[in-house]
Amino acid sequence: MTTPPFETRDPGFAARVRASFARQAAMDTLGATLERVEPGRVHIALPFSMRLTQQHGFLHAGMVATALDSACGYAGSTLMPADAGVLTIEFKINLLAPAQGVRFRMEGLVIKPGRTIVVTEGRALAIDAQGREKLVATMGATLMTVTGRDDVRH
Amino acid sequence: MTTPPFETRDPGFAARVRASFARQAAMDTLGATLERVEPGRVHIALPFSMRLTQQHGFLHAGMVATALDSACGYAGSTLMPADAGVLTIEFKINLLAPAQGVRFRMEGLVIKPGRTIVVTEGRALAIDAQGREKLVATMGATLMTVTGRDDVRH
Amino acid sequence: MTTPPFETRDPGFAARVRASFARQAAMDTLGATLERVEPGRVHIALPFSMRLTQQHGFLHAGMVATALDSACGYAGSTLMPADAGVLTIEFKINLLAPAQGVRFRMEGLVIKPGRTIVVTEGRALAIDAQGREKLVATMGATLMTVTGRDDVRH
Amino acid sequence: MTTPPFETRDPGFAARVRASFARQAAMDTLGATLERVEPGRVHIALPFSMRLTQQHGFLHAGMVATALDSACGYAGSTLMPADAGVLTIEFKINLLAPAQGVRFRMEGLVIKPGRTIVVTEGRALAIDAQGREKLVATMGATLMTVTGRDDVRH
Image 1 (cartoon, each protein chain N blue to C red):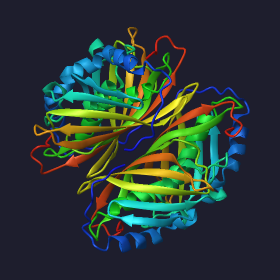
Image 2 (tube, rainbow over the protein chains, first blue to last red):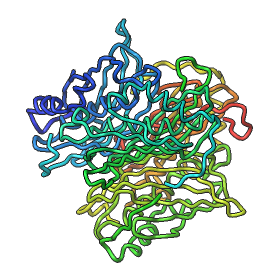
Image 3 (cartoon, rainbow over the protein chains, first blue to last red):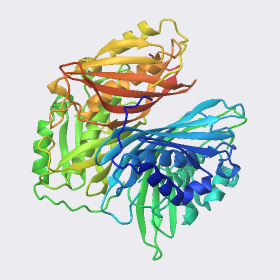
Image 4 (cartoon, each protein chain N blue to C red):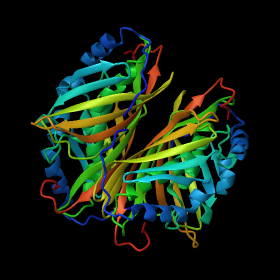
C-alpha cells in the first residue's frame, strides 16, 4: 500500500497513542505490543500464543481481528485532534491463509482521513521461525472521530 | 431474523460442535460458553471481563468479533457433514453501540447453506444487571466447507 | 428481520424521499420504482432487464447493489431531519444465489438510527413468473447524515 | 498496492476475458470499456454519464460498485483455468469521496489467488478535466472459481 504523507494536528500524537494502548486491557491479554507509531500508520506486534487459537491450532480469526482493529484505530488516532476519541464503526476482514507463525505483525494504515469519518486498511503478516513473512489477512475499517464526549477520549 | 428450518446431514452435530468448541483455546481465554446448538443456529454466552476491554472500558470490538465469529462458524458447522471442517473466509462487523453490559449473548445464524459456501449472520446483545438486552453489533460472515484436509477438521 | 417502531423527525419524509428518488437518474436507467416508503423501511421494485446483466444472463451483482443501496439509503433518509442529506459511507453485499427472476424487490431497513451514523440492512428478493420469492442477496450499509452542505441535500 | 507476479494457467486469458466482458450487457449500459488485462490485474474505463448519477449529481455508489466488481472479477478470471467461471461471493465498498469527474478508472487486483477462493481489491479513481486523479472508492471482493457448470462459464 502506498500512502500520501500525512500531517498530524497533535504533535504529541505518539505519546497519546502509547498511553491509550496501555489502557487497552485486551492488548495485554493478547500479549500485543506497539511497534511503530507514525502519522497515519501503526504497527502492532503479536507473539503466537496457544491461548489465542481456534480448534485447528491457528490464531483465531477474531484475535487477528482484535489486533488489526487496534492497529487501524490507532493509525486513525495519530491524525486526530488531541482531545478527540476514536470509535470503530465497522470493519471487514478477509482471512487469506491460516494464521500460523511464531509471531505476527499487524499493520494499520489510513487511506482517507476525513474530519468525521476516517477510512483505514490493515494487513496481518505471519512470521515464521526463519523470519519469512506471509500475508494472512486484510482488513478495511471505518472509524469515527468523537469529540465532546467524556466517556470516549483517546 | 427469520430462518427456514434447516436439516443437518450429521445427527451427531451437537456433540461434534461442543467438542470442537472445547478445543478453541480462544473461547476459554474469553470465558465464553456454548449456550444453544441447533441446526443452523448457535448462541455463545460471554460474561463481561476487564481483561477484554479497550481504552474506554467497553468490550473491545475485536473480542466481540471473536465470540461472534465462533457463533457464526459453529452455526454453519451444525449443517456440515460429520467429516468436514469449517473455515471463515471473511466477516464484517458493525458496531452499533458501546459493548457495555454484565454479560453478552452472541447469536450466529445460517442465512444460506451452500455446499461449499455458507453465509451466516450474527448479532451481539449486551445484557445489563436488570436483564435488559440491547443490540450492540451485527456481523455477516462467509464460511467455507473444507473436506479432505487433515489439518482442518471440525 | 424484526424492527423497532421508528419515529421520523420530518412528517413530510415520504414526499421528500419520493422527490429525491425521482432525481436519481440511475434509478431511471435501472427501471426501478419506489414501492414502499415507511419510517425506517423502503422497498424498491426492479423488473428484470437484459441491459443489466452480467455474462451469464443474471442480473449483475453491481446492479443488484445499486438498487439495494438506494433502498438502504432512503430507509435511512426517512428518519433524518428535513434539511439533511444522506451519504453512503460503505456497504457490503453477499450474493447468495444467481439473481434470476422476472422482477426483484429490494428491501432496505434501518437497524440503528444514530444522530450521525445510521446502520441499515438490505435484502434482494428475486420473484419468478409464478410469484415465488427467493432471497438472492443481503446487504449491510452504513450511512452518514450530512447537514449544512448545499451540495448534499436530500 | 504492490503485487506478486502472477502466473496464468490459461495463455488465452486476455481474449477470454475480453469476450466475456463483451457479453456483460451491464458494461455496455454503463459505457464502460476494458483498458488493461494482465495476469491478476484488470482496469476498466468509465466516462461520466448523467444516466448513472444519484440525486446530487455524483456517480451512484452502486454504479461505481458495478464497474469495480467487474474489474475485480475479471482480475480473478485472468488467473483461472480456461474452462472455469467466476462468481462474486461478496464485496464491500468504501466511498471515500463523491464520485465526481469526467471519467473514472476502476482497478481490480488479485491479492490472494486460491484454487477455489480468490480475494481481490479494487480502487476507483476519478479523473478531472485536467487529468488529475483522485481515489474515490476502495473495494474488497471475494470470488469463487466455478467449474463443471454449464450456466456459469467465463
